[in-house]
Length: 484
Image (tube, rainbow, N blue to C red; front, side):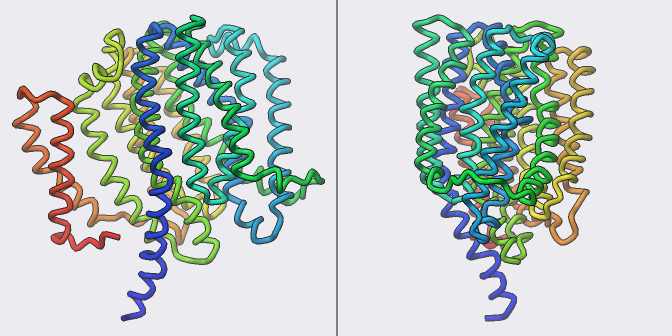
């Protein structure tokens, strides 16, 4: 056995096998999350009018905006530096510092929300009672976000899976009951979320065993500085992505009313939450392991490259099917009142593809602690996306939201490929890409003969997937790929 083969086994093959085991453990939570995200669309679209659905999706967008600014980046910092502090035996002080920062941020948020509440009402076009519920909801949501990242850092995929599944079940159950019996409309979903997430927070406290580590002491200034230096750029970057993919709901609502905002929301919920939940099976398992490997001075570029190959293998056929069968998918999952949303599906599906792809191409910035590069790329893309949303939605109507999202996410992806950290650049898996594209040829011919046949669209999609994957695995020797 040559040294090159030994190095490949040690640095790629063995870590990949460990990653696959983690993926298998995380998969149930993500697949159940995908199922939950798919189920709530027909449930909510049948129980809520398009206008009420518009209020619901805008409320979630406001919640997302506030979480990005005041809480999410703390959890991500917790994940990034957990291993480093664990090796230094500083976990109690580290977790206490994270909680202190979270509490301080929420306190600042409530002061700002009170002082500028009328501006919030006007800017977000949200009724005062809805905004109040959102402000209360952010507490359990912020706690959940932090504890979920702690579980990831502790590499407890089983606990993560159980909590995610229970969270989905409780949210849907409570929301449907409140909508059906109390007739609160969009407010019902927010109340259901608050109750279910509060229950999950209690479960997560015990799963993470965080109470065992908490020692309220003066935070280390160096530790606080590192958390802010890492987290603040991440928050700014996330706000930029929010501007690309969620500001369109507000802009559509401003120009065309809540009903059309609801249509954008349905198309968004049919693509981003469902597809990104599925695609995240790889990254949610891989990122903590890749951080640990990088800290141990192992070259992670071959692993990241191989993972992108698997990502494309899974994502491309699904995105193409969602684009080709857009109207059929809307008819299956949503109420007929929302049929106009199908025009957005191809644009948002490919937007999701490129955005999820950047989870791999931007790992380099996280590993090198150069998130300011990531921030710059997202800010540029975000400003472009915001400008495109205003211009294209106003001039093109509903479809403008999709076009703006696709252009902005594609540009962000291209920038992340071009701007590299020396020694951590993404290695393009040319052989895997050629293999995937070649496998689409028989699937295309099958589609050509069946797409106008008597076969139901859902069965057509299943047949096409079977043809694609069967051909892919049957010709892999032609491309001499190592299937780890």
